[in-house]
Every structure is written in structure tokens, then in C-alpha cells.
Length: 189
Image 1 (cartoon, rainbow, N blue to C red):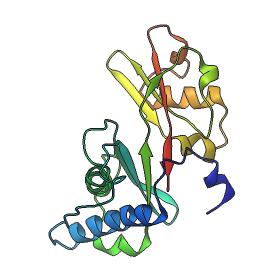
Image 2 (tube, helix red, strand yellow):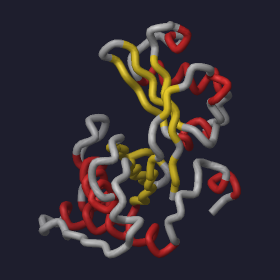
Image 3 (tube, rainbow, N blue to C red):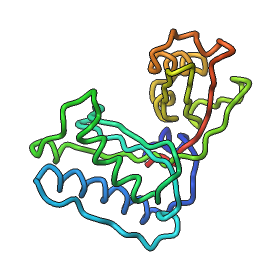
Image 4 (cartoon, rainbow, N blue to C red):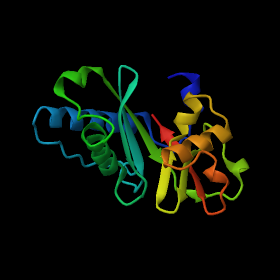
């Protein structure tokens, strides 16, 4: 793990074993689905993995984004959220064709376990590398995870502008008084 990765997000108290279980679950779900097998069910006895949390699963192929989908709301146990988001990232991300069996050996999985969202009134509250951003204006919304800005060396204003762009809004729409800005953090592994 690089020192840059250590600076991203927050530590939510998951053990290395729990993180490995979640990564293994992602891999098992995607591989099973690609091979036409029943997607494995996973019951966890871990208290942390049974906590209700939102999460994103990001799939990279040879260092390039291959799929990323998440669930913002803390409505299901973490292991169930990760299982479902792994399947969605691999097969339902509208930006990519579904993952195929011949790609499996080249895939890496990254999980972002989300903290609760908090609306901000002052953009100075946003810490690049620690926070992700959710921007809403009317029916439009966009979200970028904490690692996105850190990996691209964006400053706060660029991060806000790119989140607006992802929402389909003008880059400076974050300045509009009707725009809602929320921050959150994530345990990224």
C-alpha cells in the first residue's frame, strides 16, 4: 500500500481480515457470475461486516476503471451491500460492457465503505483526500469518492467543479444557493 493510499479517507475500524473477506467476496461474486455459476451467499459473523453501511465497489482492469457502482444509504449489512455492488459494478455500470470471463485475471477490486453524509454550508469544510462530495441541484446529482480528487491532485474548487460536471451541471453550479453540497468519508481498501 502506498503512503498516498494511507492518506485517503478514514479508518472505520475494519480489521485486515474483514477487508480481505470483502475483497474475496467481490472476486467470488464476479467470477461466479461470469462462469454462469450461482453467486455465492455470504453470512458474516463479524459485527463490523453486519453493520448497516453504504459502500462502493470499484473494479479496475490493468489500472483502468472497469466499473464502479455504490449504494449511499446504510440500509443493509455491509457484506450484503458489497456483494450487490460488486455484481452491479461488473455487470450493470452503464459506462461499460459487462465483464467477461477472459478479463477475470486482470481485475482488481477496491471497496469504499462510506460514513454518513453531512451537508456543508462552507466549502472550507471539505478536505481533499479525506472527504468525498455529493452535489444536488434539482433532479441532478453527482458524487465523487475521496480517492478521486486525491489521485488526480485536485484542489477543493476543482473537486467541486468536477462533481458538478459529473452531475451534468455547469462546473461552477456549486456556488448556486439552491445547490446542496454533502461530504462524507470512506474507508478505502
